[in-house]
Structures are given as structure tokens and as C-alpha cells.
Amino acid sequence: MSTPSTVPRTPRASRAATSRLTVRSPRFDIPDDLADTFDGDLSDACSRVAFSLILPHLEPYLIRVYRALAPHITDARIAADVEAFCGQEAQHHRGHAAANRKIRAFLGPDTAGRLLAVEERIEADYRRFETERSLRFQAAFIEGFEAMTCAMGLTGLETGRRPVGDGPWAALWRWHLFEELEHRNVAFDVYEQLGGSYPFRVAVGARSQLHFLRALHELHGILMEHHGASTRGVHLPPLLRQGWRRWLRTYSPRYDPHAIELPDAIGRYLATLPLARAG
Ligand SMILES: [Fe+2]
Ligand SMILES: [Fe+2]
Image (cartoon, rainbow, N blue to C red):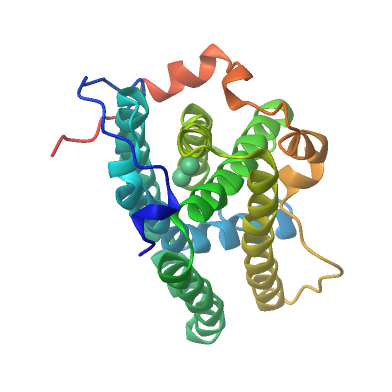
């Protein structure tokens, strides 16, 4: 792990604070036949499956980094938000890991093995970042990912582009997308708390997004091949293709997720989901 000298050393705030975020634990019973997972446009469907395959590697990494960063977070409210953020991300990767087990079984050992080779590479990358990179680098790396998913979530809301139907696969993604929007400020606040500079944020954020998108492209290609479909060029998730202007705006020096107002419908929907048990 990085040495503490990579982040400012300041005393922890003594004042306790409560996060405005909520940790929920809905369960989605994905059917063995993946009834709606590959419905609709095949490329879009493979993109969502590829995304889902990466998350049980990425989200535990985010949590490990934030656990390591916790002693350096001096603002009590940000500390409370980080705790809740980790709780939400933990629930997300559990939900996706359960879905991914069904997906691998459905695809069979040959395709699952090819997918796993890519997954193992990105897992190794995250482990390497933890040992070789500073906490500040990793905070910027995480903010790069969270800024991208926030932009994707907003585009999804705007366009209504989402998994087909009202089945468990669509519900898993709706919950995840809405909580990504709900906790959009946390990674930004953590990076600012570490004295984040703008050029470093965009340089490392771009690297983070390229790292993720490269893996997504490879997984997407394997899934398309499995279905006998060909691919051309670089694959970009549909929510980034459609919302590329919003995505680019996250690179602005004026970008601030606090300025984004969410529709009330998000809170109303999330309020219908069961809360995670404390402890
Ligand atoms: Fe997440
Ligand atoms: Fe997130």
C-alpha cells in the first residue's frame, strides 16, 4: 500500500456526522435462462453483460482504496459518505456477482474461460495499483470512473435507454444506476479532500476510463463472438456514445457533480427498496 506521505496528513475530525446516503440490499433473482439479459439490441446487451463482469473486480477495489484512505479524510461528513459509498458498492458487486454466475453458466465453459482471462488481467491491474500507486493517484482513478458512470446514469435517465423489460436484470441495473447517481459526489469530495489538482484529476481520470473501456471492449467482443455476431471498431457503451457531450463535460475545470440536480423520481424509486442490515 502507498505510504501515508502520498496524501496530506491532517488530524481526523472529532465531530461525528451522518451520511445522506442509504445502503440498500435488494435481491434480483436472475433466471437460469437469462430470459431478458440478451433481449433487444445484441451489441447493447453484450455491453451491459461485459460491464457487469467487470464490477465484482472494480467495486471491491474502490472499497479497499477508500478503507486505506479513511484515516486521511478529515471532514466528518465526507467520512460518513465514504462509509455509505462503500456499503452501496459492496451491495452492487454482490448483486452483479450473483448475476454473473448465471451468465457464465449460460454461456458455457469455453466462453466463460475466455472472459475470465480478461477479468483476471484487470483484477491483477487493480492489485498492482494498490501496491505501486499513491493513494492520491487511486483517488483520482476512482473519481475518473465515478464521473463516467454519473454521466452514463444521467444519459440513461434522459434517453430511457436501459435493459429491456421489467425483469430482474433490468431491475438490477436500475437500482445500480440510480445509486451511482445518488453517490455521485463522494469520489469527487474525497479527491478534493486530498488537495486534488485539476490536471491530475483529468489525466488520471482519462487513464482510468481507458483502462475500464479497454476491458469492456475485449469482453464485449468475446460475447458478440459467442453469439456469432461480428464487431467493427472500438466498442463504447451506448450511454457514453449517446451522452458523449455530457461525458466530455466531466473533463471541464468547472465540473462539479454537486451542481447536478436529480429528478425526485430517483429518490422515490430507491425508497421502495429494502435497507441493508447494519453491522
Ligand atoms: Fe456501483
Ligand atoms: Fe459508484
